[in-house]
Length: 215
Image (cartoon, rainbow, N blue to C red):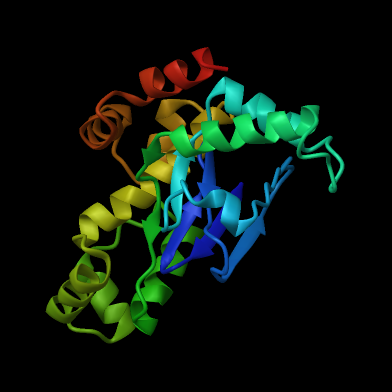
């Protein structure tokens, strides 16, 4: 799993995606398990067409191959040669890559960050807002209002966003929908699939199948 924290959000990089981080933005990256990670560094002057904010971008098969080729290019490649032309196409494809809202907003409030850390460590924790309030010595209404103000989400929607990111990782690694649903604290696969469909517009099996077909 690759996890990136930047600008008050956490990205658990889902399959067929990459995280775009603009220049001069402080960030941290955490990697767990066996991971093959590609980092593409772009001069700020060459990234004028890229988003000004950190975001998740969908990686097409062409963009993937361009990144893989760029990893073999010399650092000081000839901008007028073949590698330079590849780099130009790569930048064009990157600028055209669809943006997906696949981040987990990280609040600045210390107590809410402790909740976020606990949920990332144990995403199956189904404690209610009242229970979290007791754990953090925080009134439930204060917890709800602060979270809404800092993330724009209700507690349920906030936790659901984390579940989607974790599920995409585990399902892509071969876990069954049923096991993922139980690990995330759902009563069964149907409840999890219903949540996923409402959030992503299609059930998890179809969502991942369409991504795999694009490989």
